[in-house]
Image (cartoon, rainbow, N blue to C red; front, side):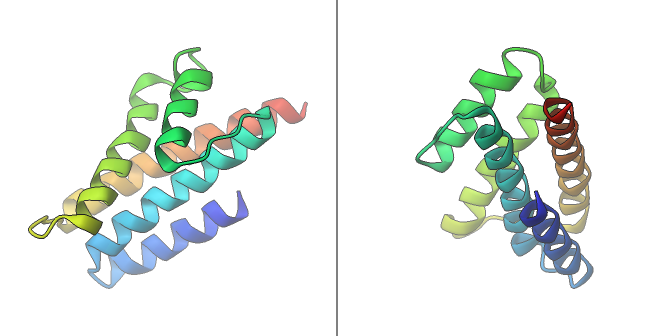
Length: 120
Protein backbone atom coordinates (compact mmCIF):
# COMPACT_ATOMS: atom_id res chain seq x y z
CA UNK A 1 0.00 0.00 0.00
CA UNK A 2 2.96 2.30 0.50
CA UNK A 3 3.73 1.96 -3.18
CA UNK A 4 0.12 2.81 -4.05
CA UNK A 5 0.26 5.95 -1.91
CA UNK A 6 3.60 7.00 -3.39
CA UNK A 7 2.37 6.47 -6.93
CA UNK A 8 -0.75 8.50 -6.18
CA UNK A 9 1.51 11.37 -5.07
CA UNK A 10 3.36 11.04 -8.40
CA UNK A 11 0.02 11.41 -10.21
CA UNK A 12 -0.71 14.56 -8.21
CA UNK A 13 2.62 16.06 -9.24
CA UNK A 14 1.91 15.27 -12.88
CA UNK A 15 -1.57 16.78 -12.73
CA UNK A 16 -0.12 19.94 -11.20
CA UNK A 17 2.38 20.10 -14.07
CA UNK A 18 -0.36 19.48 -16.70
CA UNK A 19 1.09 16.08 -17.64
CA UNK A 20 -2.28 14.37 -17.86
CA UNK A 21 -1.36 11.22 -19.78
CA UNK A 22 1.41 10.47 -17.33
CA UNK A 23 -0.95 11.21 -14.44
CA UNK A 24 -3.48 8.68 -15.68
CA UNK A 25 -0.70 6.12 -16.00
CA UNK A 26 0.29 6.77 -12.39
CA UNK A 27 -3.35 6.68 -11.21
CA UNK A 28 -3.74 3.29 -12.83
CA UNK A 29 -0.57 2.00 -11.19
CA UNK A 30 -1.60 3.37 -7.79
CA UNK A 31 -4.81 1.33 -8.08
CA UNK A 32 -2.87 -1.64 -9.45
CA UNK A 33 -0.52 -1.66 -6.44
CA UNK A 34 -3.50 -1.43 -4.07
CA UNK A 35 -5.12 -4.33 -5.95
CA UNK A 36 -1.97 -6.42 -5.65
CA UNK A 37 -1.91 -5.71 -1.90
CA UNK A 38 -5.44 -7.01 -1.31
CA UNK A 39 -4.94 -10.01 -3.60
CA UNK A 40 -1.74 -10.96 -1.77
CA UNK A 41 -3.50 -10.57 1.57
CA UNK A 42 -6.20 -12.95 0.35
CA UNK A 43 -3.65 -15.38 -1.13
CA UNK A 44 -4.79 -14.84 -4.72
CA UNK A 45 -2.17 -14.73 -7.46
CA UNK A 46 -2.43 -13.12 -10.86
CA UNK A 47 0.23 -13.22 -13.56
CA UNK A 48 -0.83 -10.26 -15.70
CA UNK A 49 -2.47 -6.86 -15.37
CA UNK A 50 -5.61 -8.32 -16.95
CA UNK A 51 -5.42 -11.15 -14.45
CA UNK A 52 -5.30 -8.70 -11.56
CA UNK A 53 -8.37 -6.94 -12.96
CA UNK A 54 -10.17 -10.26 -13.35
CA UNK A 55 -9.26 -11.46 -9.84
CA UNK A 56 -10.44 -8.20 -8.26
CA UNK A 57 -13.76 -8.64 -10.06
CA UNK A 58 -14.08 -12.29 -9.09
CA UNK A 59 -13.01 -12.11 -5.46
CA UNK A 60 -14.19 -8.64 -4.43
CA UNK A 61 -16.60 -6.92 -6.82
CA UNK A 62 -18.80 -9.94 -7.51
CA UNK A 63 -19.03 -10.62 -3.77
CA UNK A 64 -20.05 -7.04 -2.98
CA UNK A 65 -16.87 -6.26 -1.05
CA UNK A 66 -16.01 -3.57 -3.58
CA UNK A 67 -19.01 -1.68 -5.02
CA UNK A 68 -19.50 -2.20 -8.75
CA UNK A 69 -18.96 1.48 -9.57
CA UNK A 70 -15.78 1.57 -7.50
CA UNK A 71 -14.51 -1.59 -9.19
CA UNK A 72 -15.29 -0.05 -12.56
CA UNK A 73 -12.72 2.65 -11.75
CA UNK A 74 -9.91 0.11 -11.98
CA UNK A 75 -11.22 -1.12 -15.33
CA UNK A 76 -11.54 2.44 -16.66
CA UNK A 77 -8.01 3.32 -15.58
CA UNK A 78 -6.73 0.07 -17.09
CA UNK A 79 -8.31 0.98 -20.44
CA UNK A 80 -7.22 4.63 -20.31
CA UNK A 81 -3.66 3.64 -19.44
CA UNK A 82 -3.58 1.15 -22.30
CA UNK A 83 -4.90 3.63 -24.84
CA UNK A 84 -2.70 6.44 -23.51
CA UNK A 85 0.40 4.26 -23.75
CA UNK A 86 -0.28 2.59 -27.09
CA UNK A 87 -2.69 4.68 -29.18
CA UNK A 88 -1.39 7.64 -31.12
CA UNK A 89 -4.23 10.16 -30.89
CA UNK A 90 -5.61 9.87 -27.37
CA UNK A 91 -6.49 13.12 -25.67
CA UNK A 92 -6.70 13.67 -21.95
CA UNK A 93 -7.45 16.93 -20.21
CA UNK A 94 -7.36 18.31 -16.70
CA UNK A 95 -11.04 17.60 -16.03
CA UNK A 96 -10.68 13.93 -16.92
CA UNK A 97 -7.47 13.59 -14.91
CA UNK A 98 -9.08 15.20 -11.86
CA UNK A 99 -12.20 13.05 -12.16
CA UNK A 100 -10.14 9.88 -12.46
CA UNK A 101 -7.98 10.99 -9.52
CA UNK A 102 -11.08 11.32 -7.32
CA UNK A 103 -12.26 7.88 -8.37
CA UNK A 104 -8.81 6.35 -7.88
CA UNK A 105 -8.66 7.71 -4.34
CA UNK A 106 -12.07 6.15 -3.61
CA UNK A 107 -10.87 2.82 -5.01
CA UNK A 108 -7.68 2.89 -2.96
CA UNK A 109 -9.60 3.91 0.18
CA UNK A 110 -11.95 0.97 -0.36
CA UNK A 111 -8.97 -1.40 -0.60
CA UNK A 112 -7.45 0.12 2.55
CA UNK A 113 -10.72 -0.44 4.38
CA UNK A 114 -10.81 -4.08 3.28
CA UNK A 115 -7.22 -4.56 4.38
CA UNK A 116 -7.89 -3.07 7.80
CA UNK A 117 -10.97 -5.28 8.23
CA UNK A 118 -8.89 -8.37 7.44
CA UNK A 119 -6.31 -7.31 10.04
CA UNK A 120 -8.94 -7.43 12.81
